[in-house]
Length: 231
Ligand code: ADP
Ligand code: MG
Image (cartoon, rainbow, N blue to C red; front, side):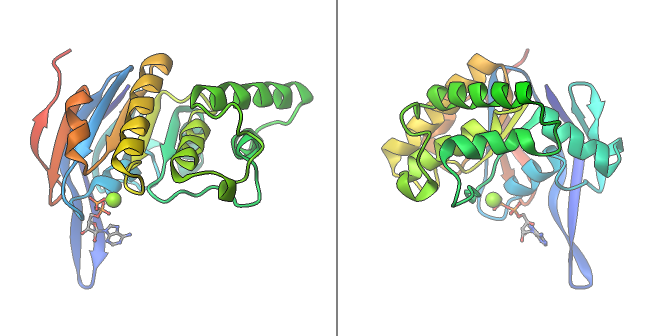
């Protein structure tokens, strides 16, 4: 579970500062997808960055599975991110020279001990996840041999490699047509349910919002409208 309490993030802007996230609070429970929407520049990506420990907020509290991540050292935050958070960035950042299967397996090599048993387990997990995102037959392909939607599926599978409790996804449909986009949203809903992640999903595509468990609408970094289930 992830809970943000009164989180503010500012960036330097000349002599002043711009407030990208303005006193945002939210709670996302396991097995649910919370949609985050709002116009360009409203702070959606900034909100995901603080939720994912990539940026430290100016103030406020961010609790992940009971840990306040704003109180952690940089090293501990990195460790927590690796263990508990899966992130799908707005720009695909697949490595051109690696196959789909290798993109997933490399997640296991980062900072981890590389016993043979772990490597074998990582291979099995990569195959299982590629199957879960509909790419069982495509694990040997490199990014340029995959369609945009297939690449997005690899990004999602990769984010799930370390079995995160929080899944953060930024505009996963922006480069896809309507039908391919809807399939990606379906997949994120399905995986959230199956793997019990607390998922935050940024999208400016309003057609997808009714299928989510809760929605936050941001304007200028502030929550202006929230439809969040009572649980
Ligand atoms: P969105 O994802 O909704 O388009 P962002 O979170 O990217 O919005 O941006 C929110 C605000 O923060 C904007 O005013 C943007 O210009 C500013 N911003 C985002 N990242 C930075 C940065 N690294 N440095 C300075 N300003 C930034
Ligand atoms: Mg953005």
